[in-house]
Length: 471
Image (cartoon, rainbow, N blue to C red; front, side, top):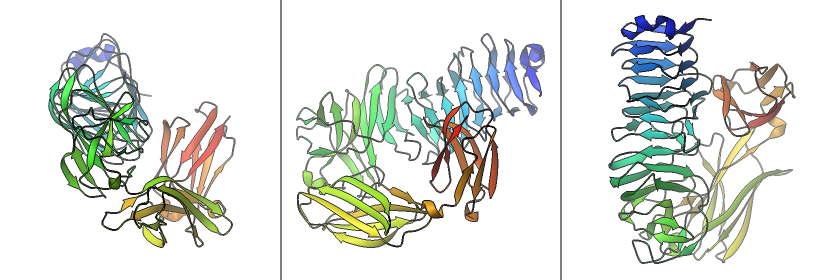
């Protein structure tokens, strides 16, 4: 293995790299490493910047392994760091990594256990950044920007923005990008945001928000936890789409803000869009905490879907759901998809118009091996809403198998669906941390002797997941 110890090569590298260089493992042990403008360094493995070292990147560094920074960096460099591995990468160390530009181009993702500070631009190409704790956030300085955020590449966790002006936080849940915008007129030490696909908690609808009219309801499927590191003043723009949304687009939509045990109406300015997608902006705020979409009239949310389940039965796939507040005639179109992207209607159930209703629909000829279902909820005079998506797998016709289970030294994944060959799959632990990624073929043999004993999950490109035990 080609280990390069910068303590030995320090004098040569201190003069600056202007020509392309490469290494398998790069360990800077107290020397000066300088990549000049126009220079490039390819590290096909791990990179460590030890305490007492000096590291300046004004060129381009491409890294396929883990990055450890124990240097206390005084200022960000002006170059670009590209995460370009095939397996999961990490950023760790006792010091925050101060970067100019960063490119995220790893489908397996990057996990942070120390801060990543961006003063230039972060380009999202492929893979998520997992920033699970407030001690390991993605921090954009007052000059920091980003581009390319999408469902397949965003921050799953905490993002901080310093400075004033409008900033779109590239946050999501690891599956969907669910951005939120904040236009700050004052920002003492940075404003932190994290997205959660869940319920921020029930509370009392009060008249103490920036608008006195109390809310009638709020979205129980998602919220953004927005909080300043010291103090901040600004306006919040909430976006909605067909992911984690139970709200129809009407003039009574507002930005809902939970303060202690109360839900506050923070206004509904500059409303755009329709039921499928849109946004609404709050009045200026100086108090913070969870925010989501709300409404001042119950008619803005004419049907509340309490639950939607799917299960296999001997005669097909059975869908069941429960609703409340059906004050007008409602129809439920059952939509089905083989890939969770393109849906077609396979039937309609008419609403009963009562306060609470239980419904069911049997798909007698389900798709195989996987079928995705959602409900399209329509009422007269309103735009359609969509339920969360449910997935069912025909185990008897499944195209996948894994062996041996338990695994000791290796794992073989067999695939009989040739259309999936070449697509990405990965293995994670039970906490969702990506351990390794690979591409599907008719048969893939993976080495597992380096894995610690325990339970793991194989994530397959058609949405299936299979657990196995490593002994």
